[in-house]
Image 1: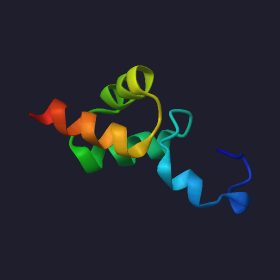
Image 2: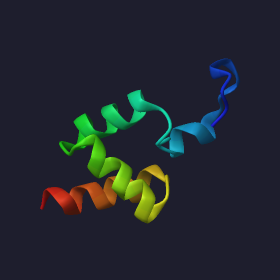
Image 3: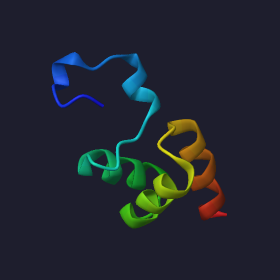
Length: 61
């Protein structure tokens, strides 16, 4: 993701950035998991949003 927020494009929506705390918190809240679990998922599966959503659902059972 780019540091300049005005230069973001549609591809940025397909990723969750572990470097952006607000993105991690939002994803965690949205999927009812902890921010630490989000970071672990990103470490294991990469930052593709669809993959992370699928894996987050598995964590919740």
